[in-house]
Amino acid sequence: MAIRKLLLPLTGTAAGEAALATALSIARLWSAHVLALHVRVDSRDVAPLAGEGLSGAMIEEMMTATERESLSRAQAVRTLFENFVAAHQVRVGEPAPGEHVATASFAAVTGREEDLVAQQSRVADLTVVPHPEAAEDVSSSDALHAVLFDSGRPVLIAPKAAPETVGKRICIGWNGTAESAAAVMAAIPWLQRAEAVRILTADEYQRRGPAAPDLADYLALHDIAAEVATFRPVDREVGAGMLRAADEFSADLLTMGAYSHSRLRQLILGGVTRHVLEHARLPVMMCR
Image 1: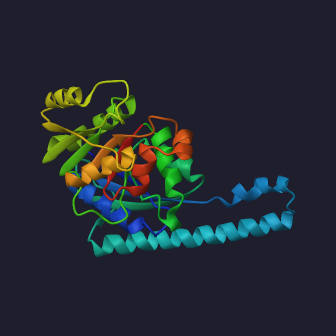
Image 2 (image 1 turned 135 degrees about the vertical axis):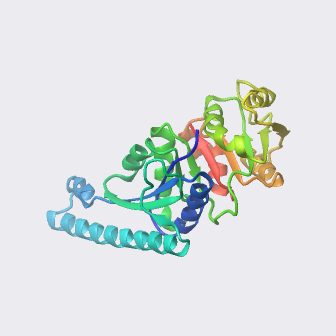
Image 3 (image 1 turned 120 degrees about the vertical axis):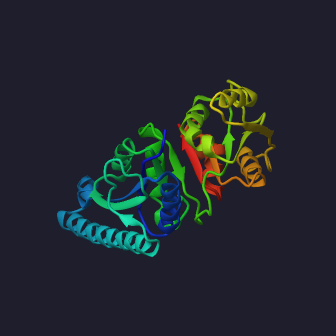
């Protein structure tokens, strides 16, 4: 299946340009449309603080400040988008029916970001999320997890620096789980046009389910030639070992399942998903 629509939640400007560049690279590769979506905070969301002992005047002042800050951020994000598409000569507007060219548009809505992003991602082929570690874009993590847990669609985490290419050399993080199977299914269109594909496996990463050679046999039925490589953890970190293996392959895309263990467990104890999210320097496509 070709990729025709990308959703790009833009929450701030710190990692926004790298995310825009990543989304645009993908749009040009697939002749797709990028919808840059900014969700403004609803100042009425502070109203529940009335039950926290705050006076009406204090709450009104907080609502005014929230509205002012929200408007300022929305203007900054829109300016970022407009300057970026102008500098890179991107056609603004949606393509005509049957027209397959790279285009982009911007929309701003008000509400709860995680709800609206998850909803809109259900009618996009791929959601590109800015890297969640940038200080100004802390809510990128909320958007990321909203798509993972509540959309049924794949999400691609853009690196902090825009990549030169996306999808020429692909690594698959495989552990036999339903999550990794979903990631492979989402990646098949990418895998079919990649120059090289490598399946990454490790004893410490494998769960109950088909092993990497089984996946290679399956991909061969889709005319995808994939080699299998076993990696070792780095300093007992499976995620670090996977990223090193992807770097050694010169991969420009890593696809993997997310949160085979619960998100809470990974937040407390760490995990492969968390490590990759925090440390990846290449685009990472995840499914759950």
